[in-house]
Image 1: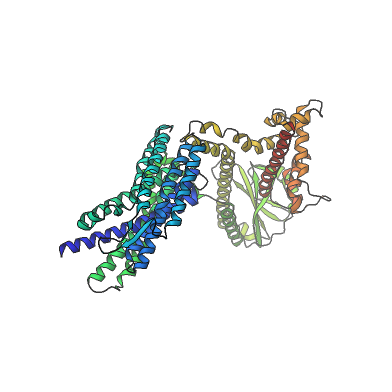
Image 2: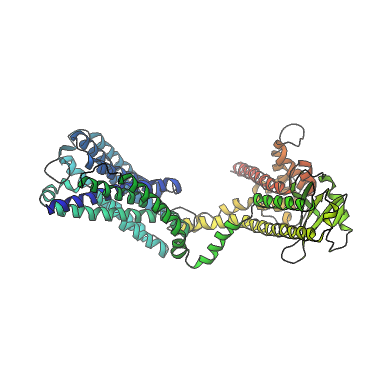
Length: 633
């Protein structure tokens, strides 16, 4: 009786582990398909994960089947996955070796193709009795197919291909570059053994042992499944770094969170639900209401715990020495003032000012570096009667005012200067009020409240300006940072990888070079010393421009801009917007405010569209350069 009870417990544990391996493999397959599909190693590993999912899902479902037809069906599905394990491992090892700088030549490539072909032929024989014999059900702990001669030949084929795969693994290990890469390659080579061993049906050759020593058999099955599930995660951890440009901490954080929220939570939910259901069976209540309750509560508690504790885990174990900097970046993300946040806050301030002085409407004008010549309206409330064309007149009017004035009356509007919140007395804008109650404006308490609101608006404007400067610097860094991360990804396992992407830097900097050249379009060092002068298309143009590099580059830029010009007469519609921005800003040299007014857009929107226009010019010049190269060849 005790022996039977212990055996049932071991069987339950093994079933939970088998289902857990299938869940883990499927979850990691989704991870590979989501984040790392472009890399050859990850794609070949995804094939292995798919096969593991098929094998262990079929095994899990087969153990619950009672009908002989269904048992045979699930065993055949399991074998379909097993048949393709050897070629998938050979494929994976070939991709791994190629990543370390040893390209896949014809021998390795054809070996992979032939192995897949052999497995496909065996798959066609699977429904027949040539490859597998009949199902044996009652003589052993679990059903299995009686082996045939082809089954034994397949076993030899399985072993040979696995040995060849490990030869490639070891060669790849010896070619790794850094200490970190070699450590991860070690994890990979060791972990790869578990799925290869755990997937093979050893019951074909150990049926007598399993029948005579069922308790030992189940203990061995549990140990093998534990190692298989754990080492699959180890393989996935090592493969997750292949070909991705993200820092290691990002890869680790993303993978660990994926594992916790996916297979760990699902497996624990399945385990506890199964235990509760089996306990109900033992007490004669197979339809226990605690089963769905356990399922829901377990899932919610694990998700809650992950959400609550993972950020702290990430700080302690993943951030390392960079913890302070990364926490500052995280705080910046949470405290960031977006344009929408700023607009909403300023509208609240304007509404509060209107309430204080009983005004019908109010508006807010921002300046750049305290320059009244560069003003734009960024917020309003009510329906202010304000003509944007009068900003130039307002700038002239304010220029004649004495510094330090706290209130300006302009055409009946009351203007409150907004000064830098840090006490530097830098003018950041004006808060305008229309149709205010004169009596309330002179009231001391009301003025104090208005000044307090003005101060808060000034702080918001100052902080937003600082953030804009940060974003500008980040945009300048983006290309270089992206290149560095790409080089880190390329050089993790290949000595030549750090050199392979050097030429991409020029392509990423092309837009910046074009912007510099257009800024000094009519003369200046950014034009005469621009790296674009080395382009073949510019060199060819010099023959027509009396060997004058500046004129040649100027002609190429103008030609690229003209390519963006739509057909027909010039208009100020969305179709013409990129051409109009380039022509007005760089070729005609108009001021930003004038261009924004003519194109009916804000200055901030104009700057964004200008970046798009410059990128479009970069694409056209790249096409011209490509055409020039073809002409030379």
